Length: 314
Image (cartoon, rainbow, N blue to C red):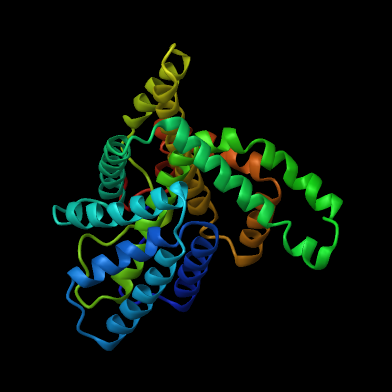
C-alpha cells in the first residue's frame, strides 16, 4: 500500500496517519511496522532529537513484542517480520516505489521462511495446525473477560464467536496470505513515518493512498492463480494457490478502496464518516464493492476519467 506525507503535513493528515498507525498496532502484528521502521531509521543515521526519541520508542516496543513470542505460529510470525524488515531495507537501496519494494520483500521473505521451516522438518500440516490453535486461542481469549470470577460465558457472545472458532482451520489455510497483506501494510506505514520523521529519509517517499495502483498486467497472475485452484494439486501447492489468491484479492480490494478515496476526496467530513461507518457495518458488501472497483480500474482507469481535462485541450 502506498502512502505519502507531504513535506509539511497538515494537522488533518497527521491525525489521519496517527489513526491508521494506531489501528494497525491494535489489529495486526506490531512487529510488521516496528522492525522496518527501526532498520530504516538506523540506516538513515539519525541525528535529530526527534529521530532519536522515535527510534528509542520503536526499539522499546520491538523488545516488548519479541519477549511475548512463544509457540510455532507466533515464532513464525516473529521471524517473518524480522526477515521482511531486513529484506525491505536491502531492496530499498536499489530504489523503486514502496509497493514494488514491498512485494519483492514479501516474495523473498516467503521463500526464505519456507526454506528455513523445511530445513527444520516443519511441514505445512504442522504449520496449519499451529495457526488453527493460535486463532482458536485468540477467539476464546475474547470470552475470558466475560467469564472472570467464575461467571458463565455470555451466551450471545459465545454464539457469535463459535462460528469463528469452528472455521479456524479454514482461516488458518489462508493466514499466510493475510500475513503477507499485513506485512505490506506495515512496510508502507513504516516508510510513511520514516519519511515524516527522518531528516534524511531512505528511499522514495510513498505516494498518496488515493493514487494507489500497480501494473495492470498483474491481473494475469490472478487468473493463473484461479486456474491453479481448479487443478488437481497436492495439498501444500493448493495452499500456495489459496494464499496467492488472498494476496491478489487484498491488493485489488485496496486498489478499489483507493478509487473510493479519490472519489470522496472533495467531499466534506460527514459523508466520509458515514461511508466509513457503513463500510464497517456492511463489511462483506464493502469488500466486494472495493474488489469490483479495483478490477474494473484495471481496464477503465476510473480515476483518470474523473480527473479534470488539462487547460487548453488535449
